Length: 462
Image (tube, rainbow, N blue to C red; front, side):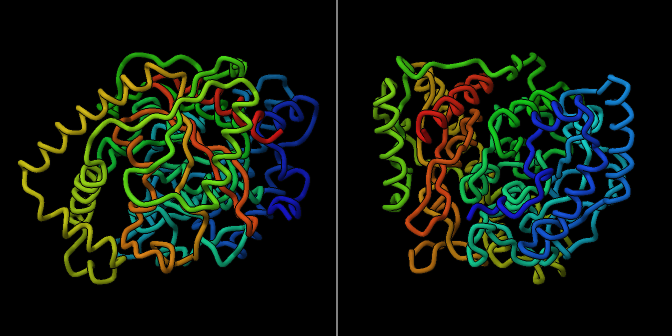
């Protein structure tokens, strides 16, 4: 049984479907009420939300309904129920960052991405769960408790945008805003069986800046690739609060251009920089490659550019964790996630010379990664090296691993390279749990990545 099977019909509609039906007379208020009801059910089942704004959502939906009836919607997502990860500022809401160690922040202004969604008429329904300060690739915290995978409540939905992943697959919203510093959009997309995009760095403006620096991206999650493209174009814009943004405009992602399979050239990235690929994941990946070959796709095995990527990512991520905890009073640290404390302590021991060397090594890797992508239309890999595992633990039980980074090796190299990457459903494990595929493309070519992801999805699921 798919987790969406017991959802009301109105909760199964994607953003593009809703726009068509709104134009034909469907009420955004009726849809919003259904989605809010569903969100409450989802929260009881999976602990996916930390806040629901029923009054605000319904007020926005009523304004949207008036615009649709007047034939003057603000955009193609006007009236579409949308969630925001609980580390992103929403005006008038209290953002908790998944922690009770410090008071929540009552946001006085929208983050750029949220402001753009609001200006497009999106109905913001609430905040989705994240681990403490979004530090790990699963979702549990003192704010939300343990967030669970809708396919099997004993399993994790991944993280750190795990609340968004659970909400999406269960129909508690059509569009979901997540963030991704080392796989935090793509891992829950894979574990929950939905689509998610980590855009090119800087395409979606971010403010305030993440303490994890320029490995952190803001991006869309949804149940279809087409909805990812719709959402991406809404919040791709220049915002002068984000100094890291390139001032050059990005090509639009919509409409998605059709990409024929015959002649499409994909580099096959089959091995992560550390650890092994679980046999269930490898089976799904090999089956997908066989179907792509049969469809005329040209596949070429590739290896990532030479670099000590695990050490390189740890230096960036641990230093960011140290910076994050430095802003929390020392007497509150003991109440925080033990794993976060451990990596922050390791980050605090790094020297300035080590950080400078890591930035230089990252630049060299990124340039080599760009050259690798220039020889292919895109890369294809497993989304995650392991299937969804037990909820409430950082690594698969019995694996011998100690940190989430060890099983996220198909994710964080792409953050270091700042390239766009889209995760799509690839199949299921023998136990019926989702396993995803990842399409990685050239920086700036987010529309191409989404188009290829849609093509691959069609070829591998047929």
